[in-house]
Image 1 (cartoon, rainbow, N blue to C red):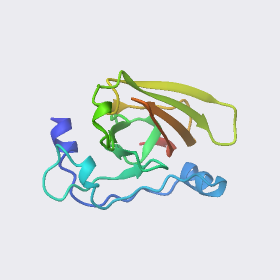
Image 2 (tube, rainbow, N blue to C red):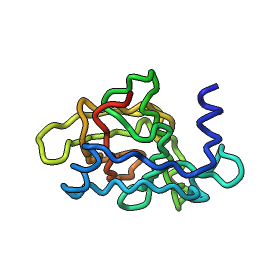
Image 3 (tube, rainbow, N blue to C red):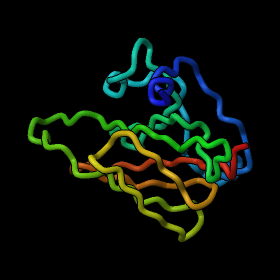
Image 4 (tube, rainbow, N blue to C red):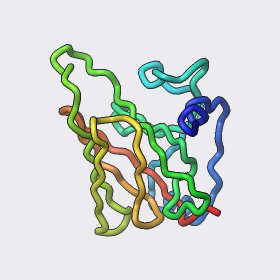
Length: 158
């Protein structure tokens, strides 16, 4: 039932400003959360005017649809940091093979703290948690493609 509810997000969602968001802005974190319509190439499975909080990769080859907004290091409400990764369709027919995984290397802004995450089967639904709050720079690799994205994780949610 959670998935059906999450896929019917229709209105804009404003992320509350917290210490992690403020620090991210001060350090140049480029985590601009869009609340308008998803691009046509990313709205499969949604109905009507597909609107959900989302962040584009720097190259525009991938979008992170945030079903948890804001993302948080600690979620005391029992929810998850659910992200749907949608990649732009390949422009050539030679890239029709399904990717093995979406590989994520995440680095906490201003530190040497690096973690890796993997989404089996390539871009798709995931739960992506980080070990602490702050701005995380994610390097994404899938099916011969690469892109980067910044995501802010708040300290904790009630």
